[in-house]
Length: 280
Image (cartoon, rainbow, N blue to C red; front, side, top):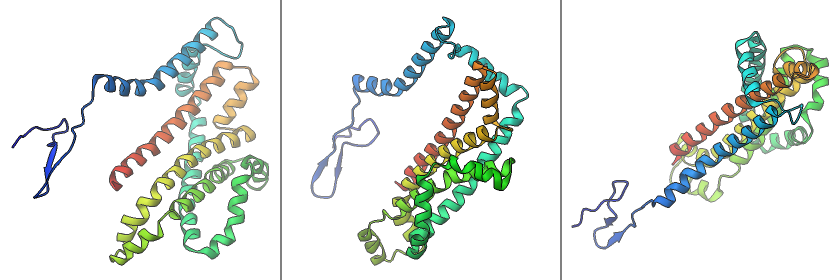
């Protein structure tokens, strides 16, 4: 029998004992490989083109609010190496503590309100209300309650992320198909087995989406609270550079925020990819 193998090392045929079943081998042409590579490079090309345009505008001084990109990047490293490390540490502490609390309590409340309809009816107005209203409107009230210290920042970060995690956890857990659940129980699935093969595969994608959106909102909460309080942290640097018209410093701080956002969301995307392979 022919021992021809496909590119992935598997034979393009398989036998089931009576009939011969053929599988078409997957072959990537040069054109398709070029298309795949181009799709991966398009975001890089787009960003590089945008940065070159900004550099040209800054060098030619076509706009007073657009500095050269190289100057902003230089200020970026100066901020990291200078005496502003304490400002970043304060901001990261508030972000970590607030999002950590939102993660734990958000998953817990989302799960409990899915299991208990009574608890869901009790908390639903509050969840919907806080999801709809602009959380920044609560910052002055929180300042009156907790003062101008780190506690206010942590609470603001928590509120920005908590309800997003709750809503996505509820949506994920409620997507379990009743027919699949009934079939799994008919075959004796219960406890950890039911959780592993029914609940988690269905709910996890939406839960991880909630975490990704939650960490983005947590970062917004950190910046918003610090720009309003404007005592310490990254938000205080934004206010200071804005008041002194230090455009390069302002863009450098914005660049730091963008890097933080990309790193945090990329980390959760990696978790999504790993868990997707595990569930598969």
